[in-house]
Image 1 (cartoon, protein in one colour):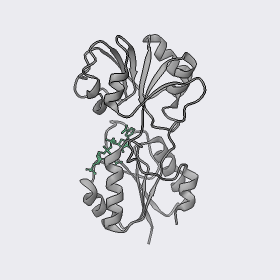
Image 2 (cartoon, rainbow, N blue to C red; image 1 turned 120 degrees about the vertical axis):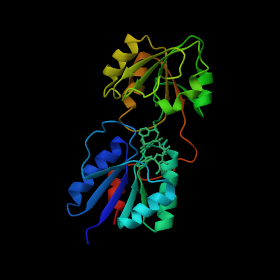
Image 3 (cartoon, protein in one colour; image 1 turned 90 degrees about the vertical axis):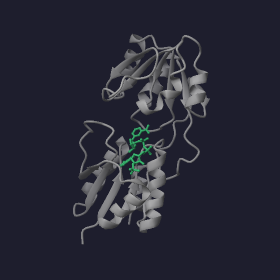
Length: 243
Ligand code: NAP
């Protein structure tokens, strides 16, 4: 029987992983699951399914119905619910779980990080009248609504369905820049004085950190949740562990 591997995705690493496994295991059914937050997700190797499972029980049901042999959690380090659901679903179904957990970014010489524990603390750490590049999704910006003295520049992949509740803001549509030069142009053109972001780790969002270092801009860096599960740091390590 053909083996089925389910990858919980939504990250660049998950896409790379799917591409690698599809080549390594041409006879296997490789399915990547996306939450459905992005209207036009980048193309993925293998099959794609979109939408929530209906909690841990729903995911466990999907694993059993599809006779999944391995579940890989390659979701974003701040996506807490789906990772917790993966642990429970693996428990319920008996399907082995592998987690791809990209390491957090580490402060380099020249970085001006103000390290904070959560969104609330990040909002409080912004100095009065700053011009802030807010590198967060729309579901995370409520904590900044109270800062009517600050101008926020928010970048989103898709036009949000509702107007953002931030008092003063500029919306920039697009994906994260893939080089420090691209991010520098954005920061200069909006006269940014501070960056707010989460310590997501990985390559996809690192250009803004490099640009901030080069421009000597302070970065208000939100730490990962304490519950963020450990896992394999690289795709190679994870692939080597798969049976
Ligand atoms: P979350 O809070 O952990 O998940 C909320 C709910 O969305 C989950 O309970 C699940 O619904 C559904 N879901 C999440 N990831 C899914 C997946 N890969 N496949 C199917 N359903 C999924 O996650 P989030 O922070 O909203 O992030 C959603 C997705 O965006 C994740 O896949 C993540 O990898 C990606 N992403 C997140 C961030 C971020 O900043 N959090 C950044 C980049 C990409 P059910 O309970 O109904 O199954």
